[in-house]
Image 1 (tube, rainbow, N blue to C red):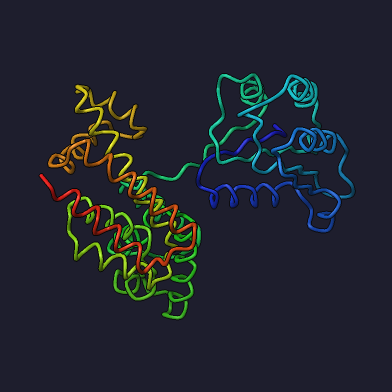
Image 2: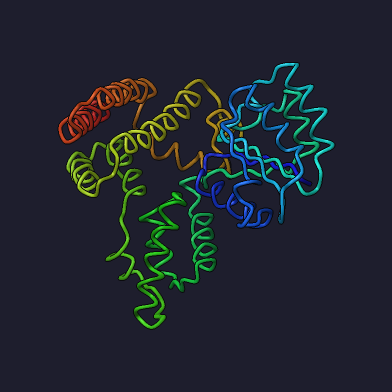
Length: 330
């Protein structure tokens, strides 16, 4: 099937899949003639790409036309749909059309249904941060792909340090691969991970938990540690917003009277085992929906201030203190 549709938030995994596809289709000596990348968010550009994919490849190998960041499954005019309908079924086997986007296809659109019929659709979403078994399985798979031998304690340490960030995981595994080669293929243990791997993502989650539990000293220490490790402040805030939004949604729905874990998980957009709701409710049992709703406005103010150029070393601790004080009130 010469049409592909890759979507999801894990941009690193998508980039890897695209590279593999390039290696499978293209001949390096004819790359300049047979590989074309377009920004796929404008109708005229998409139509140009559809015309390009109908051109036979030059020389050796096949042709690959890539529409990156496409919006074709979020909005599609009648004219564009007609072009897709006439083109997708007749693309030759040596020409390939690739769509990539971070956004989930809108299944109600005719364009989405058309691509489902004619394209190989693959989802590349991040493993949920709470899915520890899924994260460890991914660590073992990528380690095997790179050729890094990890002890169980090293897998556990990588889970804590890197979390579900596949890009950082790949970079850290490559670093560990070099270390392993220099150490005569010694199996990597937790001590090596602790000394070589930068701990970022998981500490942002721990920061959210510390603020939630009003552990002021721990929160301030984590903020200082993350900033000293060059963690982007806006990335830290994004993690905080995501966590507090999830906790707030669950609490609001629970206080509204919903008691079915499956329904709660669906509304709060929590994938995986719905029974996880029980543990979330336990984590936020001392907090009210009103308190949690107030944290979101403070976090949004924090995000706005950082984007306007506020000093992270000042405003992050200040906001953390405000939220800790807010949540400590009974």
